[in-house]
Image 1 (cartoon, rainbow, N blue to C red):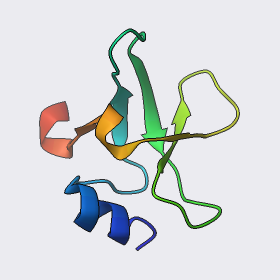
Image 2 (cartoon, rainbow, N blue to C red; image 1 turned 60 degrees about the vertical axis):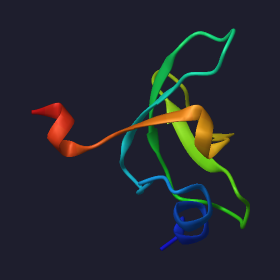
Image 3 (cartoon, rainbow, N blue to C red; image 1 turned 90 degrees about the vertical axis):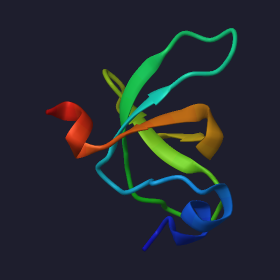
Length: 71
């Protein structure tokens, strides 16, 4: 429910708990997990591996990994 607007506007399959990879030109790829929002905004909040705090990321800068990809 927290990401309904982001899902509709950006057409991404984001869900809390989903594994994602940050991949933007000129930046190192980073893996993380989508966490819940603390406030309303148009970003996806991601806790990257090895980090304590989540970071807001633009929805189109993320690759979304579905459960079927893990199998």
